[in-house]
Image (cartoon, rainbow, N blue to C red; front, top):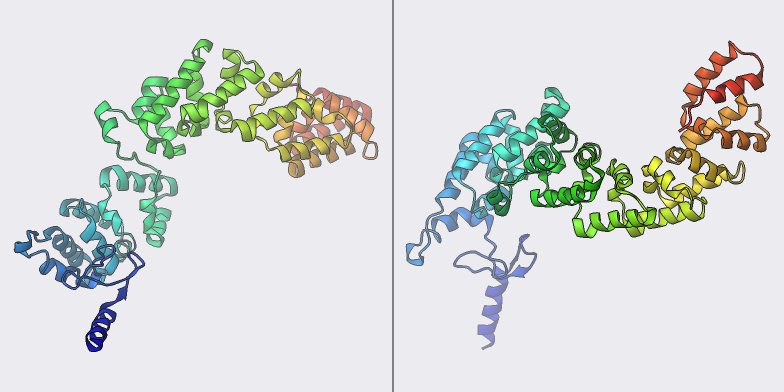
Length: 430
């Protein structure tokens, strides 16, 4: 008995092996050379398995002619170097791969890539053989070609040919069966619901190609909802066209979990009329903000800390991008302005809220320092704060623009007081 058990253990250890498919150490089925855990087929035995196991007519299995044909096609074009494990395993397991589709893909790749680059692509990403040339590879290549130009495109393809497999650019994904039955597409949804022109569609495809990889039904549902909400304003299609062309990210949002809660919160909190809601949503960026994480805390800060309770609606409508700023961003700029004069931040927010969208270090500070020198109040924050409260729009001008006007006025009008007065009157009010 000891001898029998010892022989059995020896035989099991002899055939024990590990492989990268399932990560288990397992005992392969000797008859078929497959793993007992995941039916892993050894790459070194693919052709043996194809020639023996699959040709076993008594087992009712057909010859894998597709595998042989595709492998023969690759070897005839690129030589035996492509006889690698990854490529063979993918071709063997890709049941939907046909010799016709593989030939079409290789013909397309050979039209603009050297043989060695195509060979490397087949070794690293053999799944490209299963991609549609007309709806996937060619539109992606054309998009990248238009984006980079021929010379840069060729260099990029030779350096990283897997760029052709990039998801979400330059092509329409294959539509689900339900969409095909309804004959829906993103292009058709946008043309029929908001009257987007062919020129606008081409521009949108170049600027935001991800839109055309979204589910048509999802886009249709979101656009229909917003059309219904904005209908009382009388210009819903015009507003939606502007939203789509400037910031189309909202098309990827769900109606019940994203769009509806945000529209209802803004409408109720700011007491917006249909026309005011239409004005607020025109940029499209507001709809991308979460109620709990962005809209609610930001509006509360504007109302309580910047004392904008009475002017909250006016402030938000004049500069909707204010809602997209983080609390830390708003607090930092509020503290910086109030350090000059108490209440300056509130005054600037009411008169010119776009100042809060400027960079504190690169815009606001340099402009304040320049104006302090021009107004002769570098050591007097009280005077500086008074002037900024009276003319907050000056902070929206560039330093170069202010310097140009200052030099022009200095050459025509004498006296620092007259120069600053004239400079101030040249500043437009919002």
